[in-house]
Length: 515
Image (cartoon, rainbow, N blue to C red):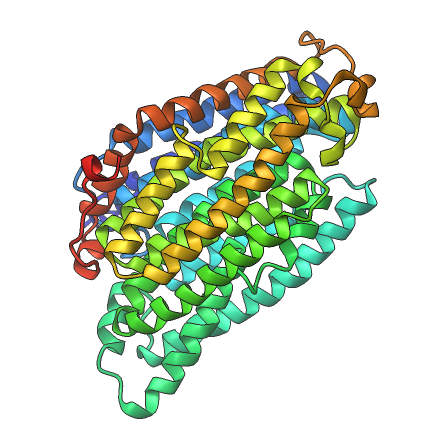
């Protein structure tokens, strides 16, 4: 057998064409910046966005196609990985759209910023389909190290440097814990690295080896919980969100978190299938803590970025309801919620970026009376925040309905009740911002809004930001009204994934019954 036949029959490299497109885009960005210099800023961001959209198109062109696992079992290109990889790629594309003016105003290199973000995206996409321990860890580190670099990208900003240092120290510790957990898993399975083989080997462990499996499970969950910002592994989130460049925070809150949940599903459902009850119990506790602490502490925040940081912790708790349910309905609702979370959360951060560019602050009190100076920004931020809170008929309402219904069907009554109560609490701090922007009288305007300059959309980078705002507004509004196609996509991705079908209790949501 010649080399080309080996590649075609064993490696199945064609399955990673979307990632290869990202690599080519990354190389063009770097070389284009080297050749064109400052003039590259005019076209490189749009070339990167085009490459990301092409990658998403190639991903969905292979939907439902029979694709064997690539690289001798290391990478799975099933429909579930397609959805998660597309979420990571789309979050990067929208973030680049939002960051053009922000990075230019900071005086740093836009091409370098885009290159680092593309590298993080590549890591997140590989992590979403990784099916082997070595590939999981390499992809996780590619995503993490790029995130550290982006967090400290504003080198002259002490807050950015502090956030990067905190993120690096805590992230390195979590990576070491996670690595120790998967190394124990490797040893217990007799040297296997492919997840399906590991599951077979550890299903009949001797009683004396069960302690090692328990330790491995705890350490692996600790690493995953750090990546998705679950309590009590959330300590880095508020400080990193507050000190990092806002476009970076937008990407971390969506792209990085989606990759973390993809890792949780693939690793736990496959490799730890023999201890499903144990990790379900642990994630039930993590979901309870995340929903309560995230939404309660968010009530006391005075900074928009810190409020959205604690909000993201609470949102992670809601998503974990679907994971804990362990049914096909639970996994479908998880995927659906992450799809809509992409637009409503990035839309909120786009508004925060624009307001900070015009006023230099992200304090909630400074949004007072904004409607009278910028109705478009007020409308977009209001819609995104209300959707995050779960107000009908916006997308977030249907996302939470599906999650809570899946949890209720799985018998997680207390978890769902806590989710409902904390969701009501979240509505309070979201509506507080909306009320401040809309209801305040002219004499109650904040100083920042009184001095709010007119928006010159002809400035470099402002038109893309406007496009991002309008895109988030339209998508968040329509995703609720037209939720069926997105939910059908999520359901199909779960129903066609053998890994989940063999592990899940066959309980499905009746869409007519929950609307």
